[in-house]
Structure formats: structure tokens, C-alpha cells
Image 1 (cartoon, rainbow, N blue to C red):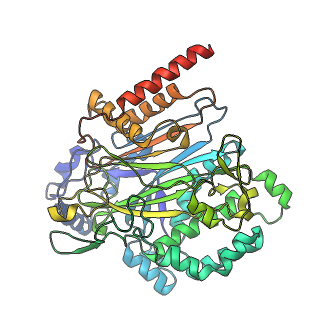
Image 2: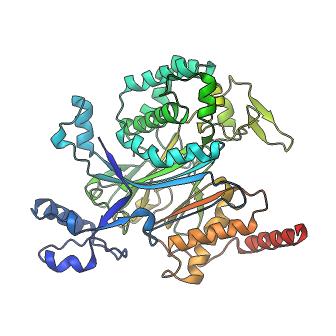
Image 3: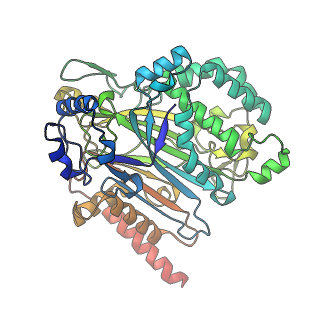
Length: 495
């Protein structure tokens, strides 16, 4: 029903003369500023009314070759293999009206199956075992599984039954027995007020925001039931069929364990324009106008960090570690928690994470890929009255989002990483220090810190509308210098 593409279309700067009657300006390939909200909507209507095909005149820009907006860098550091992977794609999904039509009639007529809504998806995967088999599989195919999934509640229950029958164990038996309460809690009635990362329930502020036209925005209901169901179903289905190999029913359990080794964490962001009329433009994120809807999914311990307008780092996810009280409660029927010689809690004496894709040996005990789903309003606050801006989770006008694996987060705190990025831009200038440049700098910093047992390191950086407008303050510069000095002294000692 939907589709994915690793590129977007941009209008070249010299195309304006051939469309002289049009006032709507596409963002240029260099990311030069676009027009305001009204002119964008008017231009979109003019483009739809025009019989002239513009797709052949547009520039096709690959998202992994867009250094002024998206940066990505990865290194195996001192490991034999790089088991980290990542994906950057534009998801083309049906509009809300098309989706409602689909669920009402059981399918959209072929001539109307024209997915127009654009959603930018960045995902990062930290593999373990199997030479990165699962992480590479996720990077190549998971986004396709998401856009192809439009399940019903009955299909979700059938999937839980497959887990119960094929994998077995008390965890899946209990989940299937309590499937109605599970569905109500995590899919039908789940919202960011219940799953808030940054604040407690008493500090999250008013859920209602009013724009300058008096329209109501409910910041805790950014995802509907069908959208949450799609994510849950796509994750669990992909894990069962492809990561664990149960789509091949001809092999024995022993052969399956040998043929489908390893596992992977997964952290993803899905960004779209809050105003759906603006999301039909694939380049909405290049110079975004208005609010953006940010959806975050989390499985495992890869991290997603947001930098606000004051240069403060905010973690958008909670890690699924064995020492988490929340995960201990989820797996309360399991006796698989143990403490190693370093004092770290492990699950089934082998797994640091309690949620992952793959890892077939731990599936019976509840090592699932059930995603935590969070949603936020971010972006340009020009359409909000000043009194309403404080109701946004991060205050609006955010600077960038960073996705990292534990090879980075184990060596640098969230604020250290944020300060490294902002200070690099402050010193090198906006023209030189693009998101791609600073992503490479992050990996160089980690390689300088990491010892001979350092893990793989991967960093993705997405530029937001307030890029470069943070305060000229380096809060953790002294800490980073001390770490670099200690690492260099250790290297000389080992030599």
C-alpha cells in the first residue's frame, strides 16, 4: 500500500523561469530557505492543478549523499567486523483519508492507491553475533515491512498466536492469554503522557496547545491506533519470519538456530509535517516551516538524542537493559536474570539487552522486539502564540537529532556528544561543519578514546531548522580533554 525510496526530489534553483507564473518556491538543492506556510499551500494547489509534469524536471537527491542536512558515519573501530548498520529512507504512505478508506472497505481501489504523505525515516541497528546478519537485514528491509503493513486487530492476535505456537514458553502464553489488555494498554490507549521519557506525569504540562488561529493540538495524541498497530505488527512479524527464520517451515529447530544466528537492537525516528498538506512535499525537512511530528521507536540500547535551542541534550529513549526495573517487571515470570563478575546484570547469562530482533535462543523467555513508541512535537513555533510555546516538550526551535550505537554512548555522555557537535560547528563555521562533517568528527573522537576492546561506533545526525543557533557554550570541553589525555597516556603505556 505504501512504498519507500532512498532519495527525494528537489527543484533546481535555475528552474524558476520556466514556471514564472508560480510563486511557490521549492527548496533548492543547497537547502536555501523556502517560503512561508501560506505560499507553500497555494503552490501545492497550483502544482496539482497544472498539467505539466514536474517530476522529470526535479533533481533526485540521494538521502545518503545530502551532507548539508543528513550526516552518517560508521567504523568497526578495533573489532574484526562492523556489525552496526543504518538506513535512511523516505516513506511514502497513504494520507489519513486513504487510510480510513482502506480500513473501512478492506482495501483501496488500485487507481486511488497513490501514497502521497512523506515521512523521513532514519534507523540505526547494533548487531551482535552472526557477523551482523540481523542488523544488515533490518537496514535493508525493515522500512519496507513498515510501509507494507496495514494490519487489523484480528491479524495482530493471529501473530501473537503464532509466537505462542512456534516459539512457546510462558512469556508468549501469558501474552496471548492477556492479549486484550495488552492491546488496550500499548496500542489502543497508549500515548506520550503514559510513556513520557523526559518528564513525570505531574510535570508534562497541559496536553492541549492552541495555535494562533485557535486550532487545538493535542500533543499526547500524535499517533492514532492504526499507526501504533502498524509499528507493533511490522516489528514482530519481521522478527518472527526473517530474523528468526520461521517463514522457512521445512527446517528443524537445530538447523534454524544454526542458520539464523545473532541479533540486533533498533532505534528509529519517523519525521513528518504536523500539517498533512505540507507533507506531500518530499523536501519538507530541508527547510521546515511549522511544527513537525517526531515518532521514536526503541528496541534495545541504541540511543537517540535531541539538542534543543539552548544546546541541552535530551535522551528520547529508555534503554532495555537487564537492570531496568521496568524490564524486570515485564519479565517477572522469568528466572533468567544473573549478575556477572563485573557486577552487570545479564539476561539468560548472555544478553545485556532484554529486547532485540533475532536472538532466537532467548525468545522463549521474552527477549522480544516489542517497540517502545514515543511521539513529540518539535520544530518551528512561528504559528504558536508565545504563551503556548512552553507547552512543547522541548520548547520548539530544536537544533538537531543524533542517533548513536553503544560504542559511542559507552564512552561519551549525551551532553558530551552534543557539545562536541555544537563546538565543532562553532569553531569551523556553518559552511564547513555540515552534519556529515560533524558525524565524522564524532567517530574520530570515539576512535581516539577507545581502547583495543572498543566496540563498533555509528552516528547519524539530522539537521533541524535551528541548526547553528545554539549558545556558544562548551559545557563539557574540559571533560573531553581529560578523556583524550588519559587515552593517549594509556596508549603510550601499552606500547
